[in-house]
Image (cartoon, rainbow over all chains, first blue to last red; front, side, top):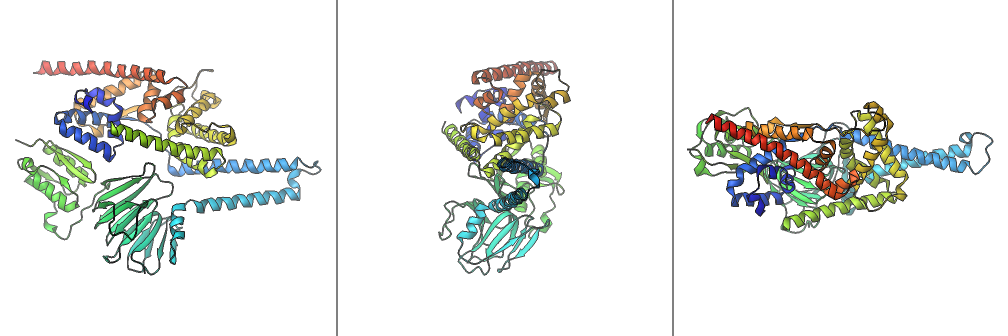
Length: 371
Length: 206
């Protein structure tokens, strides 16, 4: 990292390692660069500028939906199937001298229907093969399981025996023990679902979804674990949730080794590199509404910035890191009720000439203070 | 240093996974084949569309490419960089495609142009000086020779490595480095003029 102490703005903009951090940050890259910045605070400005430039310059790419890609692929696969059938047909046709057109002969029709049927059978088989992680969980579990498959187009609500509620998105499946007789309440998911779990500290609630296990006592959260997606995502709405990789997870162990998530945080599991990253959800919502109703108007009038951040911290339940002593002298006057959290932060930071950053599901305020 | 090694390790693991999928496909595993298509389609589509404005032709070319690969799977090399190999094959296929040449009104015999539009997203930048710098880079990128543009695109916007770019363009890795250096030089040169212009501006004002 030594040469980054002296390099210029354009060196940074054209630097691979720097670009990678800006465009595809990982916790490790973040740590590395933050350490560098804390050791060389005078580089803050140039790094900030360079990252803005890197992010701003884009290439105009045509858009294509996942749906369309999937149908194009299906089309290609169908063509392959058709060719295979045609070839088998022609080959068998070559054995006998042709009196009638070969495609009119009974044996050809039989062969064709057989191929068609086996082709269809194979397609159906493929469909069911797609959920192999899920299937593995379900077959490995010895208890009697109930399965719910949402084949419709609308989300479907599933009520579990313990009173918990699962909103199952279209095309998703869950399996669970009918009575939850074990030490844990275990649910297997493939696809997407939102869970509203009834609190029971004696019986933790476990959701197995692709490579992740999510463990809660009683809270609400959503899980996205589609077979073909490159990521598995868990987002927390209320309460506390812990998430761990399924590999090496032991249901019986007391200690649950994983990431703890609080409201408005999410964890993304990158399936290719097998890595968990904590961050904030796209649209954080206000959580402690009833408790501090009167304080929730966000209309600040000459309020010291540290108090403003305290209000935001309580409202969204997100940890905000700032230097209270420095910000005491930065008054904020702004009506901020209508904006979302990120907009609020942007306006406040602009007013007090600070910058904010999202790191590991927390907000970090960088400020030089106000005179 | 340690981070670099770690990064390389991840990269190697990723390549290993891609390669296993590829080998399964060459041995006739159609679900591996589908997985490869699903993974690579977006990149191929983005890259292909730089050669033709007609999205249908680009989609056709990609599908034809995959059909061709399936039919010749027994003869394919088992040790390739999947992304680079596919991009290179698509590039060749597009160059051979008569429809593209006529549709985009190219004089016969010439390969289609690599056309890419760079843009600056103003929403990121409120500072006027940075906005000007970004626009400056964008303008430079827009005006550098086609070859340099393609290499910059592959390096910075598709995140390919030097050797992969060399494979896509059928040139040596050293040539890739040279082309990149030339592009950097143009960016730096134009940047400097702009930068001094701004300094001068400040000087006159104060």
